[in-house]
Length: 475
Ligand code: BGP
Image 1 (spheres, rainbow, N blue to C red):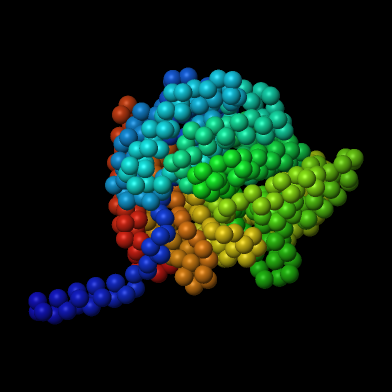
Image 2: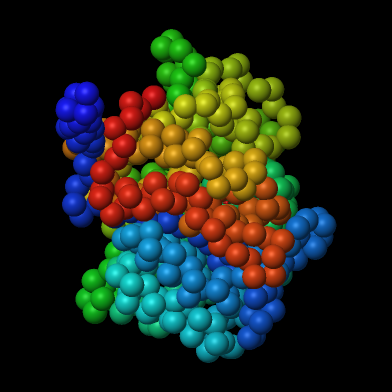
C-alpha cells in the first residue's frame, strides 16, 4: 500500500515538474507602488503640497496623510521586498517632496535623502529599482500656473528629471517618465474624477496630452544627452493599455476595435514609436471640430520639429494592464458638445471577466505595431472587496495572466523582460482604501500600519525565486 502511494506521489510529482512552466532565467519579477499611495508624511520634512492633497479636501475624500506610512516604514518595505525574492521594485518619486513648489529654487535635501536611503537599501538587498518620475502628484504650485495645460511645464519637468538623474542615476537602470498618460489627461482633465478634477473633455484633455508627450520627450532627451554615457540606464513611459476585443468578426466591429485602440494606445504610442498622433485621431477630431464651429482642430497640431523630437524617445515599451473592454461599431454621434468620447466614436462595454485571454494578443499587437526592443509589464493585479489573507482568487488571476504572458514569450518569441505585480501592499487607491490590491495586507486601523503577508505573497515569492509558474491551465 505504502509503495503504491509512493508511486502515485512520484508520478504526480513528475507530472507536476514536467507541466511546470519556466520563465527565462533573466526574467525580472517585481512589485509596484506609487509615492502618493504609500508614503504618507504629507507635510513632513519640507514636502510641499501636491494636487491630490488639495483635491481630496475639495471633494471630501479619504486622505493619504499617513497612507501606508512608508515615509517612516521604508526599511520594513525593503525587507519585505527582499524576503519576497523580488528582482525589481517599482516606486515613484514625489516631485513636491524634493522640490516643494516644483521648481529648482528650493531643493529639499531631506526629500532627496529619503529616496537615496531607499534606493541604496534596495541595491544592498539585490533589488533593481524601477523609478517612475511622475505618478500623478503634481506640485500644487505648478498646477496653479496651469498644470498640464501650460507648455512651460515641460521646462519644469526637465529640471525635476535632471535633478533625479543627477542624484539617483548612478544606482538606477530603469526610469519611467510618466505613469498612465490616459489617466492623467482623461480622468484628471476630462472626466474630472481625479485631481485636478477638471471637465475639459473636448479640448483640455488634448492639450494635456500634447504637454505630457513633450514632457516625456524632454526627460528622455536629457537622459540620453547628459547621463546615458555615464550610467547606461534605460528610459521609457508607462502607457495604460486599455485593451479592446471586438464584439464580433464583422468588418465594422474590427474597424471599431482598431479605432478604439488608436484612441487609447495609439494616442500615446504613435507619437513616441512612429511619429505624430494616429491619422484617424487627427482626421476625426479635425472633422468634428469643424462641424462644431471651431476654426481649428481641438487636437493640437505638432510641428515637424516636435514630431521628430518626440519620435524615438523610448528604450522599451512599458504598460499597465488590468482589464479589457468589448468594442463594437456605432453610428456617428450627432454633433453636440466637444468630447473625447464622441471623437472616439465607438461603443465600449464593461470589463470582461477573464481578461487574461486578451493579454497575449495585446502583447503581440504592441510587438508587431511598435517593434520595441523590450516590453515591461509595469502593473497588473486585481482588487478584492476585503483584506482577507486567503486571497486565492488573486493567485488564480495572476497565474492565469502570467501563463498567457509566458505563451507570448515562449510561443510567440516576444521579448517581455519584466512583470511587476500591483501592488507590493494594500494602499491608498486615489480617494479611498477599498481596493486592497496588495499581496501584503496593511492594517490601516493600526497606528503601526502593520504589514502581513497574504497567501498571494507566498505564492509570488515562490514564483519570483523559482521563476516557475504553477502548472494550472490558463483560461
Ligand atoms: C493604476 C494606477 C495605480 C493604481 C492601479 C489600481 O491605474 O497606476 O496607481 O491605482 O491603477 O487600479 P484600480 O483599483 O483602478 O483597478
